[in-house]
Image (cartoon, rainbow, N blue to C red):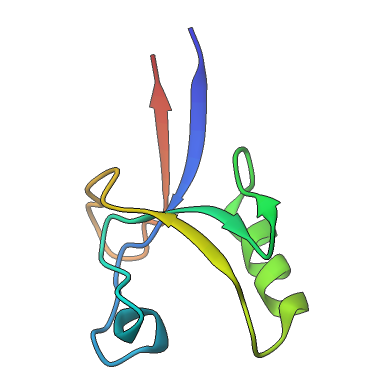
Length: 79
């Protein structure tokens, strides 16, 4: 058995920078500025993005899960 803790976009505004770049609700962030996000908490991911400044490089996987409820940004997948 294994568990993967993913950071999921839950509310992407079409007019936001992420929305204009093609990010959709349910997409998972796999890397932030080259750092693997597996096991990273939402506050840790936020810190990495803040340290990056105005340019943040993300590796995103399309629609790995559906988020329910406002503000829910993490998904735990176990197998």
